[in-house]
Amino acid sequence: MLRPATDDDAAAFAAIYNHYILNTAVTFEEAPVDAAIMAARRREAAGLPWLTLEVGGEIIGYAYGHPFHQRSAYRFTVENAIYLRSDCARRGYGSELLRGWLAALPPEIHAVIACLGLPNPASARLHEKFGFQKTGYFPAVGYKFGAWQDVGYWQLTR
Image 1: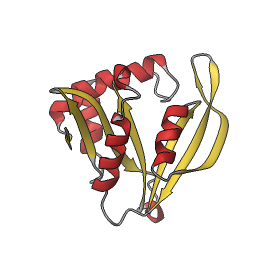
Image 2: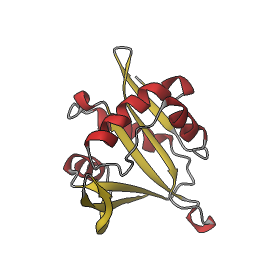
Image 3: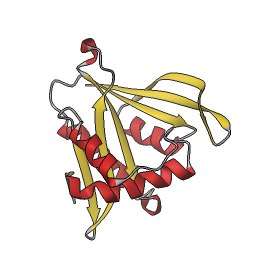
Image 4: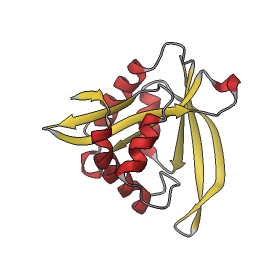
């Protein structure tokens, strides 16, 4: 079941996200987050959708967006993110989340940017499946786990 997120989902979101913070370079955050932080991020989303995916009554993933940049000319461009519980990958749930999230976007949104910590072939494939094109590559721009990390940008223009 895909539904709008609420503050009650924040603890599950933090648990899902903390796996990626602590074990991967797909996010450049380095310190775990808690439910209060996740709830605050959802409330500060500037009217952009945050969606929860439940299977069998358990939250297994979420998708959200935030403004791409704060300058006013960027107001029609957003950045998206999708996170699944680590044991739920490669089952089509990411596609379900991205499809639903794109459908829930306000109509005035013109461009969606996906910023991916690389390598991340699963996320790149997912975004490309929905028409995103790779538009940028920044080598060695983040430092995590004692190594320089790369970032790629994918863009969908609606």
